[in-house]
Image (cartoon, rainbow, N blue to C red; front, side, top):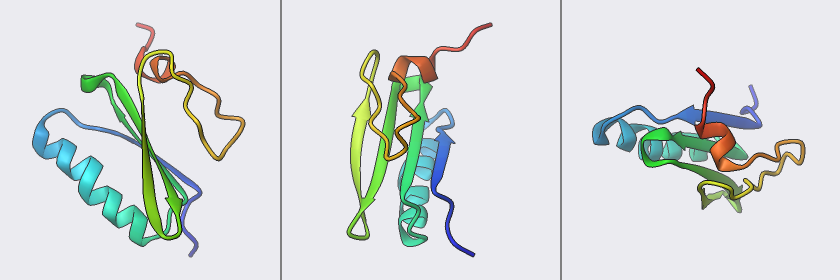
Length: 87
């Protein structure tokens, strides 16, 4: 089965969970050759996009009004649009 084109992970609170969600899963997704992986960390008010280049993830961090650059052109979002939710 081919890997998914995109994985979006919401980072769980706490350093142990952050390590799992941003380091361990990153390695797992990289090994599975997932082309793009997003780690959304509301606690730190940032979104990190990992893009697979030559078998290795390149990392870009986005905050506030920065527009996230994705290989999927339809996904043109500012980081704060993902982090802010309506109640």
